[in-house]
Structures are given as structure tokens and as C-alpha cells.
Image 1: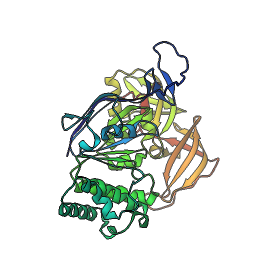
Image 2: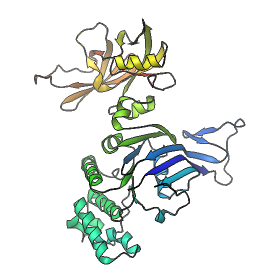
Image 3: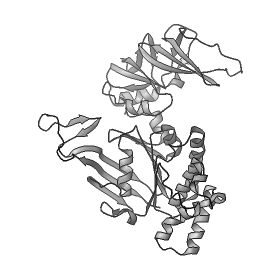
Image 4: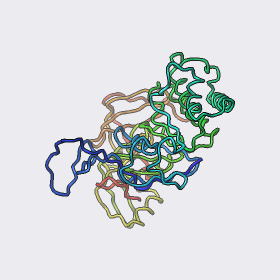
Length: 396
């Protein structure tokens, strides 16, 4: 029920008193644990720009320490904004108290009161507002119904499973009917099966309540399945913003390409060739002409022939029975995954992963491979990702 506008949001943690700093050249920033260190302090989030529309589900994703939770806490008002402007429904809220921002937050640790029942935990924020008892009862029971925890309203948190506790924590947040619901890695304490179930529950919840969501996770599977758009962060900077399909199909740089997708994209030292106006990639004796759309993108940007980093996803690598114009790889590990096998191999001096189905279209088993066996690999020109030596995607 709210649109947000983050303009150049920055977070700097000042140096502690008496902290010694290594000598550096005048005007040159230091590097420490991948975050920029200046005379003012450690910059945890740098020039974060994002417009979030009403009722949109935004996911902030990235490795630990990239600044995603810090950004979320600045939106909540739990962290002071060092620079930039935060608007909620057009109102500047940099200096507005958290309780006055009409925002609710779900934490990783559940943060339930152990001496209260589920009902009392969910009703607590409404009692603080001195809301009418009948309205409190209506909201709590409605939220419990949405989250399928009505049968647990009289229980204490210790009598609940991890997934049930997380539902209670979410229920306590949504009873307030906030403009914005913030979720900080809410599923990280759950096992794999429960995480899958809770992801589905959050998708259902999103369809039932009219709230803008901002969700933080380091799990790219959660990001891909939950978000309308995902914001990929690294070292305090935004790397790319887009729909899950956009960032999967068109990663802006090598970091995004390697972070989004499981298993991780394969990378090769390769060569981008241009012959008679046609682009092709060449790696380890394998030459592949790029698809028409990639040709058009590279031609429009007048990209010259050059040494590149070539990216191909494991599921896009194809086994070939022919040895000509293929990339040769040696199997090191074969992981049986049921319907498919993940081959970890060495190709052209790089560790690569190749995903091969265990059965063909006719239901017949495909030949298996073992450690030391040789694979002949190829791929189509439509699945190649071409990165310059600076790590940026040359198509965009």
C-alpha cells in the first residue's frame, strides 16, 4: 500500500575513537574486507537508487556483508541514513521515527515473546496502539486464518516448530496492516523442506494482503521464486536490478552471472572473433557463431574482436558424439541427482559443471561416465554470455 523511492542512499559507519588507519596516498580510498574505507569511515552501502511501486515484491540479494540488511534497516529506521533521501508515498522520512513510518519487520530470529501465547504475541503491537479489543480479535484471527495457525493460538512459542514460529512472526507483522512489510532472511533458520514450504506460503500471503514487500536473502533460489524484481548487491553497490528472468538471461556482469543460477555458470578464457561482420566465440578448439539477437547487440555497440570471458550455464552444455569442433573435458566427479547427472570436469584449464539427463526422450538410459572419462562438449550460439576483461557484459 505504498510506493518507495530510495535516492542515493548511503551508509557510513564512522571509525571508532582512536582507531588506527594504514597510511595511504592522499585522496585515495582504502580497501578493507571488500568495503570502501574513507576518512569518514567504512561505507557499507553506496549510492543506492531504487524506485519501488505500490504492492511490488522486491528482493535484495547478495553474499554476506554486501549491505542488503543494512539497506533494509535504513528503510525501517533502525539505522541512520548517512546520505541520500528515502521517500514513502512521496514523504521524506529520513528523520521520521520507526514507529511513525507505518512499516512492519520480520526478523531472522523470530523475536517472539516466550511467556506469551501465539494470540498474545500477535495482538501485542495492536495493544500498544490501544486499539479496540474487538478489532484486535478480528485482525489476529484473520491473520491466523491466512497463515493457517488458528489451531496454535493458545500455544506458547516453545511448543511450535520453526516453521510455525516464523508464521507467528509474520502474523504479528501483518496484523498491523502496514504500508510496507520488511523481511530480513526470515527462512534462513529453517531446514530445506521447510524453506520450500514457507516460500510457497509467502507467495500465497502476498496474494492475500495489499502490502509492499521488501525481502532480504542471500539465497538466490528465494530471490528467483519470490521477487517481482530482484536487486543484486556486492560490496555495498547495486550490480543489477531486473526481473528474475532478466537477470538470469541477461546478467550485467560476471558477478551477477556467477551468483544467479544453480549450479554456477561455467566461465572460459575465450576469443571473440569477427569475420565478415559475423561474431563467433572460440574456445579450446570449439568455434560457435553467435545467435542473431546477440549479433545485433554486439554490432550495435561496435564491439571489436578481443579476448573475452565466455559464460555458459551447466544445463546449456551438450554432450557430442563427434570430436570435431568440440570442447574436450575430463570427468573428475559425477554426482547422480536422480533425473540428471552433474559432471564436474576440467575443460580448457577451467573447472566446469555439465548437467546431463539420465534418460533420453524415449525413456532409455543414457550412457554413464566415470572419473577420467573424456567428454566432448558443445553449446549453441544463443546461450553464450560474452564478458569483457573488465567483467561487464559486452552486449549491453
